[in-house]
Length: 138
Image 1 (cartoon, rainbow, N blue to C red):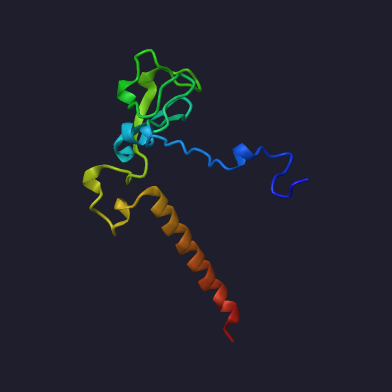
Image 2 (image 1 turned 135 degrees about the vertical axis):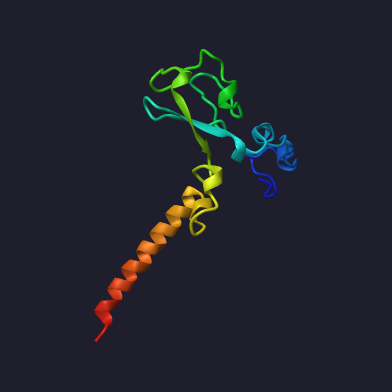
């Protein structure tokens, strides 16, 4: 038996390199433009949030379709509520509240909800460590 070739491997296929398929760039990112600018809407009946960046697979709505462009017959995929029962909750990752109120306060108003959560829990952790440090005072 020849040591160069294994009986299980076809030598003609072993020498060829696999072809790389070039994929087009992500089309959903190109269609969405700026995902930060797309408003999210929440159903007042059940709390479902329509995310334009994800669309609605149950009703065959593709990603990138703003709430305003949904067909008039579209209903909440969870509770089947009418489109009129939805209210705008703002874009994901944007500071919450009215635009004119964002300049007030100590700069916390311009933070995103994720940044506020981080600030709150870091403050709680530092407060806890401060209180625990009293155990080491003699």
